[in-house]
Amino acid sequence: MSFAVIQTGGKQYKVKASDILKIEKIKNSKPESKIEFNEILAYGDDKNLEVGSPLVKGAKVEAELVKNSKNRTILIFKKRRRQNSRRKNGHRQQYSLIKIKKIFAKDGAILSEAKKVEKKETKKIKEEKSKI
Image (cartoon, rainbow, N blue to C red; front, side, top):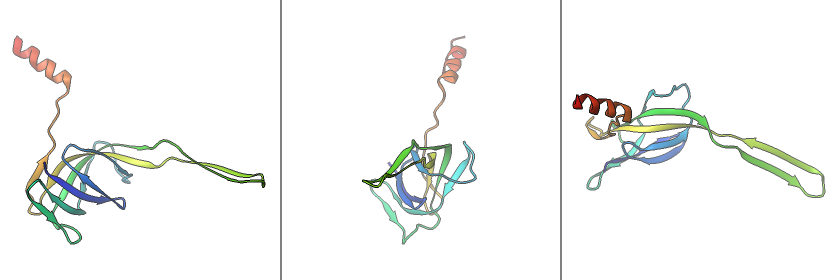
């Protein structure tokens, strides 16, 4: 199974085709839009491994944005004892949910590609047409 190590939002992720990731929010992007990650640190499979120094030039990962949303609330509560001083804050971090579609090698060849999933309704319609 082919994989790639990408860098986005100051973090590194090991991804495979058809993986779903929660990453830092990507600005100015709409759901179901195509995203390309060009900062590839390494890619390979069970036998081969290509490591960049620091990046692999020409390699890229193609993904699709599923949705932009916010995480659940994290409470920040600070209290100083015996001083009647307390402060309560909440924070909801924004994130983007993405699905990895394709992983490209540095020469442009496709290493791995996500399988296309047909919806159940379309399968039922095709089965009914074949019976008739």
